[in-house]
Length: 598
Image (cartoon, rainbow, N blue to C red; front, top):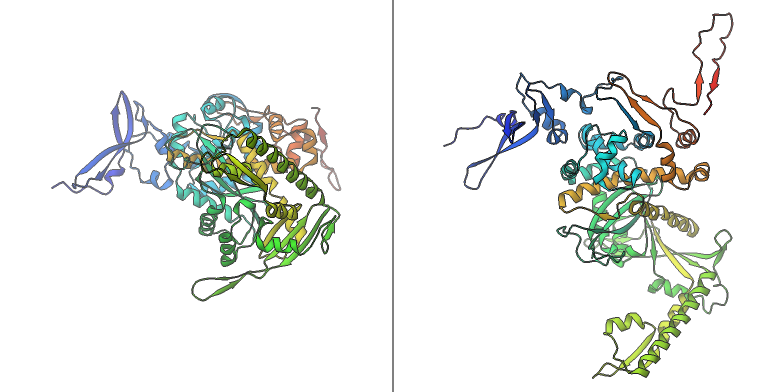
C-alpha cells in the first residue's frame, strides 16, 4: 500500500534537470484505473546557477490562486516575480531593462481606447488580476490591426514597437496562450461587457464566414465557400451594439448551419451572461416562423427584415389593387422618398400547457420604393427573355437537360416538359402565376417589429444602422488580416476567437470615432492612415531612468482632441511657464502659456 501523500506536496517546487537545463517544477500525479499514481513534471520556469527563479509561460499564464499555492525553497531568489506587472505597486517605477528607443504612438492611442471602453478592467476581472496574460492578449489584439500581418511576425514587431507585453511572444508562446483561454473566460467576458450595456439598446445580429486551413477542426466541414477557395469554412456570429458601436457577443457555428437555426443558442448564451433587455435587429437570414414565435414567447424586442412573399404580407399588398405610380393609402416620406404604412398584428402563441402569449406590440412596417419597382420589373422581363432564348436553343439543338434541381434554379420562370427517355426538352411555358406574384411585390420591402413603439420610419432608420456591423466584418477580413483561420486545433481556435473579439471591440470604437469626426475624415482616408500618423511618436527608456515620450505635433494633436485624450505631460505643443514670480499684493497673475513651434 502506497504511503499517503501530503496535500501540499504537489505544490512544492524543486529543480528538475532535463537536457542540460534546470527547471523549477512541481511533481503532480493522477490516479489510473488500476489505482496507481501516474506522475508528471509541471515546469513553472527555469532556475539559474545561483538559484534565481525565472518565470516561464506556465507561471505567467497561471491564475493568482495557482501562483499562491506554489511553495518555493527558502534559499531561492524570487526577485523576478516582484518585477511582473501583476505585482507592480502604484508609483513611478524606473525602467529596469536594457536601453530602448521604440515606436509607441499608435499603441499609446489604442491603450487609451482600451481604458476608455473598460476593456482592460474587464480582462483583469476575467483572468483574476493576471496582468501578464491581459497584456499579452492586448498585444495580440493590437498587432493585426496596426500591421495587417499574421502572428508569425509579432516577436519582430516587439523589437521596434513598445507593446503592453514585456516578454517575447513567439509562435509557441502564442499557442500556449490561446490554449489556456477557456469557455469560462469567454462567458465571464460577456458578463463584464453586458454590465456596460444599457436597457433597450439596439443590438444587430449577423454572421460571416471564414475559411480555415486546419482540416481537423470540428466546425469547418460543409458550407459553401463564398470566396470560391478550396477551403472549408465556419460561420462566425457577432452581436454588435449599434448604440455603443462595439461587438458584445460572438460564437462560432459549423459552416452548414443556416443563420435562422442559430438563434436559440445565441438567446441562451445571452440570457446566461446576464444581458439586459436589448432589442435585436436581424436581416432576412434569421427570418423563420419558429424564430418569430420564439421571440414572442420570450418577450424579446426585435426588428426583423422579412420577405414580402409571406402570406400575411402579400395579402396587404394585394389590397392596394393595381399599382400605377404609387399604392393608395400609403404615406410619402420626403427625406427617404419612400412610401410607407404600419399595421398592427395580432399573433397569439401557445406556450407551456394552456397558456397563450399575445405578441407585445407586434407591427408590420411596409415600404414601397417607386424607383426600385421599375428596376425590379425590368430585371424580371430581362431574365424571362434570357431564359426563353436559352430554352429555344436547347430545344432546337436537342441537347439533354440537366437534373431537376439545376433546371429549377436556372429556368425558374418557366414550366418545362421533358422526354422521359432522354431528358430532351419537349415544351416550355412561362409560369404566369409566379410572374404575376413577382411583379405585384416588386418595389416592396418590409420589417416586423416586436415589443417597441417605433414608427415605420424609426424602425427603418434603426435597421439601416446595421451598416456599421458590415463595416466591422470588412475591417476584420481586410485591415486586420483575420479573413482566414490559420489554426489546427480546437484549443487554439477558441483562444484565437477570444483574442479576435477583443480586437474587434478596439477597432470598432476607433472606426466609430474616426467616422463621427468630420475633421478626422478630412485629414485621413481611413483609420489605418490615422494610426500611421500616430506611429512615429517614440518611447525612450534608459536603465534606471523614467521613460520619456517624444512630442506630439501637427495632426497627432488633432487626433487626441477628437478622441478626447489628454496628451502626456511635457509632450503637448503648449508649455506653461514655471517661472517664479515675485509676490505682490492683489490677485496673482496667470502663468503665461507658450505655444511651441512644430
